Image 1 (spheres, one colour):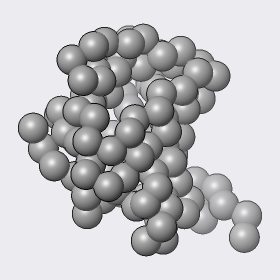
Image 2 (cartoon, rainbow, N blue to C red; image 1 turned 90 degrees about the vertical axis):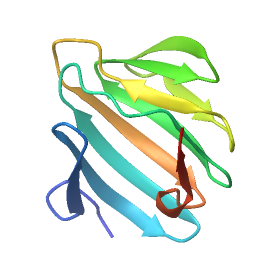
Image 3 (cartoon, rainbow, N blue to C red; image 1 turned 180 degrees about the horizontal axis):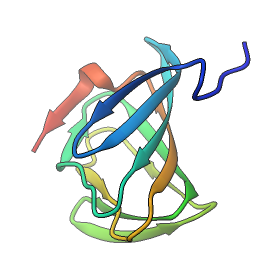
Amino acid sequence: MKKTTKNSKSYHWGDGCTAWQFVNTPSMSVIRETMPPKASESLHKHSKSQQFFFIIKGEALFELNGERYTIKENEGMHVKPNQVHCITNPSDQNLELLIVSEPHSHADRINI
């Protein structure tokens, strides 16, 4: 099935962030997100899920196990299970990204 932001379930999280679920199965999720300027999520980890974040537009600041990384358009970040992480949009423009989680990560989130 062809998936777009117009035919996919969406939800809002954090401070003005929007997500669209392209794939939502127990074994995998694929989500497109938009984070407004200066938005951030809290530090957390997943005990079972690994994730791959791919930046479509903008620039992201990742914290991963206490280290900080700037990830730009057409770059990605792989987060393995039990790695403490968060993402921030430090810029004045929207951040657009794709997140692939295997297995699905929503029930596997542990806030730090």
